[in-house]
Image 1 (cartoon, rainbow, N blue to C red):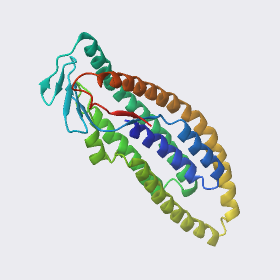
Image 2 (image 1 turned 120 degrees about the horizontal axis):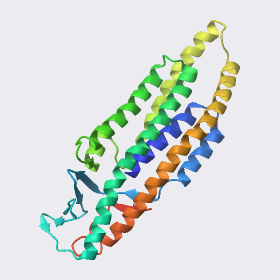
Image 3 (image 1 turned 120 degrees about the vertical axis):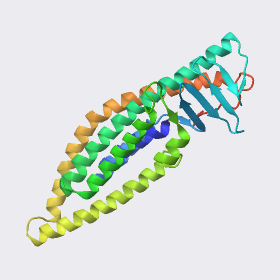
Length: 270
């Protein structure tokens, strides 16, 4: 879950400030701010939430199933729980179920901001017909569409399968590096596209490097102002998600004390 919010927040941040190439200090400040505000809880392990049943695969390859009535099965063998243990399981199950829609909220906000970055930055100096801008916008929209279709594929219950998200959407443990690679390729293509346009303009006597620098400086100021207001919303939603993950992590620590469930260890503090 955390990988998804990092993907969307990181993508919109990287795309916006990498695109405004001359704003190195601003970009560094944003990246440092982004790192300092990251939630310190990570989702590790295999989780499947489908048809109101939570299934966790432990490191020892045990299958732990929790139903919507808070019954617990380990390798299909039902556990006998005390009233207190059932309350812990309930808090854990409910917390995960409530967290999934919040992941989607954060993802939606991240995509919206990233699309703004594409429109205002790449198209700002490459033009409305830029193929690079269109390709990146398509990738981001496709990512959100696939995520949304996965989570809400069953109209009666939520779905969230970490294995599917990793294999089909690429939202695995190395996604931060994959985002960096995508953005490197995008910026390489964008600069190639810009240089072609710049060359044509200079040959026609319509532009110069000084003109470009002035455009980028003005654009950077506009982006900074707009991004500050737009990121307030996603920051609040990301903080809410982090609080929810923190509560789930507390519930998980209690579930781990139940005999037979010590291997349940999805949420790990960095």
